[in-house]
Length: 302
Image 1 (cartoon, rainbow, N blue to C red):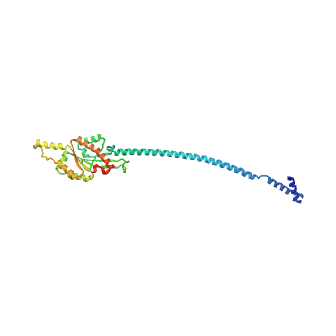
Image 2: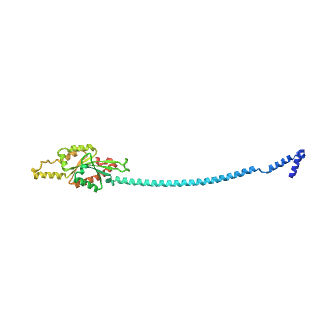
Image 3: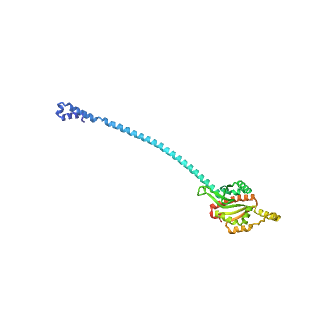
């Protein structure tokens, strides 16, 4: 096995006289070459350290990003749960409101709130009739029925309207007119209409203004008034103006025959009249609700 000295010696022999003649530069070049071959370069070492540092920083950055990402995702999940919670609460409240409306609608359609929905529009002339107006307004108030005193197109008349709840009506705050008109007459006034043959023309005028309404003439103490006038003539004919008894029965029969949806009602006193109007108001409210739910079956339009 050759040693390093043998290799160096052989190299010197083969190199020839250039080395023997003493060329120190060549020898130093050889030594430097060997040093360069055996010594690792510092440049390569620097690159390795830098690469290792970069890879560690990259891992740390990824770990840091992952932590931030987890925090962000947790926050998003928290917000999503909060939104879902609020949405469920809103849906629950909406369902409760719908259920409440359905119950109110069912009660209204059954007529439980009918008297609260109807309003009687009373002509000012009715209130001015003294005892009739006082009894009437008091009785309506006692029954918890709403009324308004106003000037109606027909004097001494009462008409009605109803407000339909928004959850039932397709139109917001719908007000419907009840197709019924009541005309209140004192006994003497009604007798004058019959004797002057003005009742028929009066009925025609009412029907022109209210073509779809049922018309009712409500009298107060009519028969008592007629009987009193007749008895007065018999007892003291000299002191009484000649008074002709109106053909009440005949005229009322003509009303039924010649007109559609026209009739009359006679009350014995103011209390009965007031009670009749209050009861009629209740009945109209119930009938109108049935008509609104099933229009063809309305008894008011027959």
